[in-house]
Each structure stands twice: as C-alpha cells, then as structure tokens.
Amino acid sequence: MPVVGISITSVKAVRDREISGALKVNNNAEVKGVEERELGALGKGAAIGFEFSSKYSGNGKAEISITGEVYFIGDVPKLLKTWKKEGKLPKDVNVDVINAILRKCLVKAISLSEELQLPPPVPLPLMVPPE
Image (cartoon, rainbow, N blue to C red; front, side, top):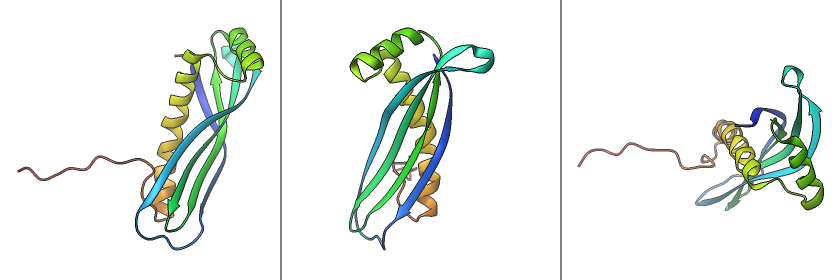
C-alpha cells in the first residue's frame, strides 16, 4: 500500500447542549490538498491534507473534527498531475487514502465521543445472549 503514514494536526470536539433521544451521526472524510514533500529515508512523496468530521444532529448538536496529513509514496507525479488538473486523487489512491483516514480518525472519534457522553460515531459490535 502506498500510504506510509498519517499524522493528526488538530482535534476539536464540541457538544453544544444537553442531548437526549435519538441522534443522527454523519461521518465525512475529505481531502483538502496535496503537495510534494521529502519523506526522510523514504525519499520524495506526497503529503495529502485531510479533514474528518463526525457531526451529530437531532435533539442537540455535537461535532468531532480532526485534521491532518496522510503520507503517500508511489506514483507521486501522477498523483500531483491528477490533483492539479481535476482537484481529486486518482481512484486507486483515493481508496487507500480515505481508508487510512477512516481507520485513524474513527478510533480517535470513538474515544472522544465517550468523553463527551455521546454515542459512538459508528455502531460497535454487541454480544447477544444465545437463544
């Protein structure tokens, strides 16, 4: 996989008021920019800026926002060309990048949702008694 790392640069978690009843959660991961970068021993690569959010709505509002960078090696010239021309990543790269963002940020969002006394942003598996 050409994704070699991910770093978080900011985290914001806010719960506006008392929340009760059913809540709807909308998770979103979005690429915000791409730049060529020297990645130490890995050589030239790309830093792909991102924003992740879990927005809660219903009887009350809350939001968890995370920004950072995904580090990519591979066909960086193709990546940069596609980004500059179309404003998006090549499809194969996009899948790897978004999956990396979701893995990293959903784990952090689950922890933050617990601190804010919110339901987790994704359903967690539950054991049910045998019948």
